[in-house]
Structures are given as structure tokens and as C-alpha cells.
Length: 185
Image (cartoon, rainbow, N blue to C red; front, side, top):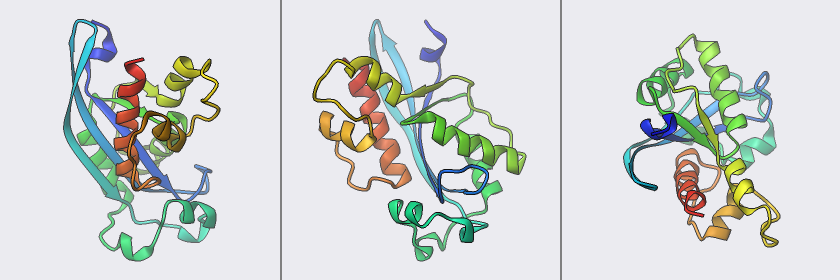
């Protein structure tokens, strides 16, 4: 069995205050943690846990207003938010040895890696990372209907419901559903 098939999968989505890891910050992480059992060539997935954590922004004044509008940031929704270090400790504990899967994994992992670096918390995830954009492109690049690879477009294409897009946990759930659809192609 390949290495990837032996680990739990962590479907991850982040919300940030902008696109630049040096200027903007992580404000929300959503995770769907999934076990996988392979019966021959067929995977059986089971959701082990879902969690979402809102993080207290330290420099909201640096936020890109467009990013805050896109992810629906409202200070009153962050009243119960926790400090970044606490969020990363929780995240590291829950995702230990799991393989990160995200839609545009480069973006999410850049902010997560930066948060681990900033807080000094050790990233305990497995080093493999999978990207659902790359997977979708590899399978759908000849389909003339598919001209975009955004999570929104691919959810519409595969008829995946995502009622609160640009919110971390719903997007992580949608990424898990997309992964299953693409894997089945």
C-alpha cells in the first residue's frame, strides 16, 4: 500500500486577512479529519472529526478590505476567537501525522506554515500534501465545459452543496466532497 493510503487525511481550508503571508494573517482554520480504508482499489472514507477555530487577528489594520468582505469577517463573530499560538497547538495536535489536502494547497499551507513558524509550534502533519485543483485539472483538462478550477465552479460542476463558501469549515467539507468526486473519475 502506498504511503498516502496509510494516513488520515486532513481536508483544510483557511481564511485570511489578505493574500500576502508577510503582511496578512490567518484568522480561521477549518478541518475535516478523515480516515481511509482501501478495499482493493476502492477507498472507504470515514469522517473522524470536524473542527473550526477562529483566531484573534493581531493586526487587523493591515487587512485587505476585499479579503475581509470575501470571507465575511465581522468582529462580533470573532468574540470567542483564540490567540494564534493556542490555535496552532490545537491544530497540530488534531492533525498529527495526517496528510493535508486543500483546494489550492499552496495558499493554505503558506499561511499555516507561517503561523507555525511565528508561534514556534511544531507542525506534526505528514510531509505529503495534496491539491484538489491539480487533481481536478489532471482529470478534467480535456472537458470543454471546465474552464475554471475554483472551488465554487467545481462544486457547481459536480453538484456539491456549499452553502457558506469562504467560510473555513464549509469549504473544507466541500474540498472533501470534491476530492471524492475527482478520485472516482
